[in-house]
Image (cartoon, rainbow, N blue to C red):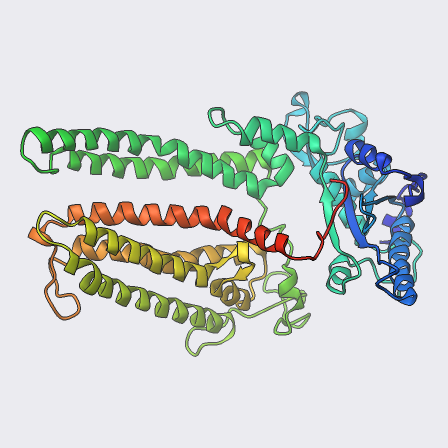
Amino acid sequence: MAGIQKRRQKATRYFTEDDDDDGGATAAATSTMPPAMCAVFKTLDPDEHESAEIEAANQVREKVIGKLRALNLNVDQFNSSDNKFIFVTIGAPETMLKYEAEHQRAKLRLREEYGGALCYYLGELDEKKAYDKPLDGFELFSSTLQLKLIDEVVRSKPYGSNEKDEPIDFDELMADGKVEEYFPLHHSRMRMKLVLEWASLMTKPQPLEMVREYFGEQIALFYTWYGFYNTMLWIPALCGLVLFCSQMYTYSSMSGSLENPFILVYGIVLSLWASCFCQLWMALENTRKHEWDTLDFENDEKVREEFMESNEVIRDEVLNDVTGDPEEYYYPDGSWLPPTGRARKQLITYVVIGLVNAISIFVSFFIWADMSRPLMEPGNVIMGGIIGGVASAAVSIIIDSLMDGVPELEHKGIMAVLVEGELWKTDTEHQDNIILKTFYFKLVTKYFGLTLVAFAVNLTPVMGEDRPCPDWQCMPVLQVMYVTIIVCELLYSLFQSQGIPALKKAISNLSVVPDKVGGPK
């Protein structure tokens, strides 16, 4: 670490709040400055706080700024327009960025004449101008990469510091209330390009390379999947439209029934489509892995902080089966019988999922037997189908909110807590298990009610009695229930994304507490 700090170039220009008389320099600087991290400190009002408290807050701020300058970072200070906050922006000289990029093995894309692939940054290649410009217009490093490099430096020790000197921990400072916020300031140029060329356009291909450069490979891969999925859905959608038109024709002019031979053809088309979909996606995914050089992503992945900080993790005691070296962090997978280690915690998760599914199944039987079916009669299933659909959607929404949580309300779901307790080592393992176990209960909560009507109510007693569909025709019932469920879930999704934030904003406006942060954007 000492060698790393020694080679960092000394920053020569520092800007303080005294240099900004009217706030105009603040706006000008923040609109033209390169990407930087930003720390927000609160200015204490002398009329509301003791002088000793104000002095202590100033000392914390000056200590943090002193450590940042000791790291040879560019430090600028701006007052907010209401003088209630001080914004400290943290940048790095180009020579420091180049050294950190080489030390941290940052990947840049080569120019086409050098192959166009991603490779680690090397000073020798930079001297030959072998690297292509990033899409956000900077000469060498993208805004995202610059922020990552700056943040790594911020969290390290200054060169020549005592061993007792701890690096800056903004998470701890925010938890203690000494710092209001710590966040990255991206350059607006790339954000505006994404807004104009991606978010605002629905007819052009996604700029996935731009998304990868700004958000990273994980987000870019998600939108690769999302775009591929929506594009491939055109095939079953158009085929379904043709089937629907044929059903309407036969219903109105011939048999009076929705059944026709094209339903079988549509099923065969969907089977072939599903097979092609999987094969084409695997090919596209492998293409992106090669283009973005993420083939060894899981091998290079960092250990989760929550895993390292757990008291149950064994440190430097268990030997690696391959290398024979002690594992720095280890947690046993355990066994299912008797339940030990991670398997025991997974068993608890599966028990909870089983109980949730059992409740969902019982409620689905109750909805059909006592709420939906009594309102139906031959030739009139609309009211019963709507009631059944609304009740099924309500059950699904309530269970999803409890298990998945509601991010807009900062409510953490039961599933996240259970999987967190399983102590997975990497983010990929952790996310994969959340996705898989979420699928296990959502498959039942969302679809069992429809499956019950489609395949069971005509064949088996429900709640001790025979309650088949009117005239044994379940297709009209399913159509009404399905449309109702979709409408209810869309309305809830709209309320969750728009209504809850609007309500929170309205409630906050009624409060006398001022905005948390006000100042340059």
